[in-house]
Length: 336
View 1 (cartoon, rainbow, N blue to C red):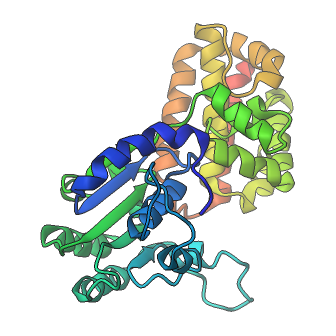
View 2: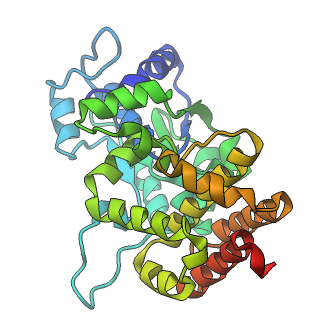
């Protein structure tokens, strides 16, 4: 495993203080892109390590660490959707990898829990992301948590804890993994060779790993900039052409872009400041002048509703057309 990210050292120290009284279930919650999964993997390897260091880190040299690095440790199970285990492009006609954690994956834990620990220590299950469990899987996990096996720790990594059953949450010790301060994220990205970290961080909701991913994906970066160019000139906006171009883009991503743009329109009106699209400050100022505050708030509410329904839109193109039409009506005053 790689070392922890620089913003996780304090959280690690907190965890080390807890490891002498291990819970049966641990919930690592926080926004996507701040390193929760990486932290959880370090934590799991450390608990399985035969001779962890003074600060609790895995030694990287014992037989247990070698097994863990090679993904063959007999006392460790990673449960995640197939799409994360095999994200490569599938052959045409092949079955698409699942995006959910199935009930069969959770039920297999009962066999694992009944096994003797290979090294006489802990057995660890890591579920990532926990909100990917379908309803049957979540209920099966609840039964496991209600009758926990000795010396087995279940770690749930979760971006959206509000989507988990309250009864599951109540049985977990919770550690919050927050986004690091802007200066820490910026410094880290600069060390990765990123020259414009502030803009990327804003685009990524200040999640450093998402910002790095965006920097390495030139196609996605171009797509985002093209989108901003279109909506920054609402009077010239061709709603149907843009909606058609966006069809291959994840609906949740497009809605997030619109939410960030709407946030900046509201922020410039109320505080004179911009958070996400600093490079388009002049456009934001000009567009915001003619927007009625009540209409902008209504548009934000419409985006919030669309975000909740964006996981399985029946027709992404119609969704984009509807949202872009609302934006056009909001910004081009002669339509009102």
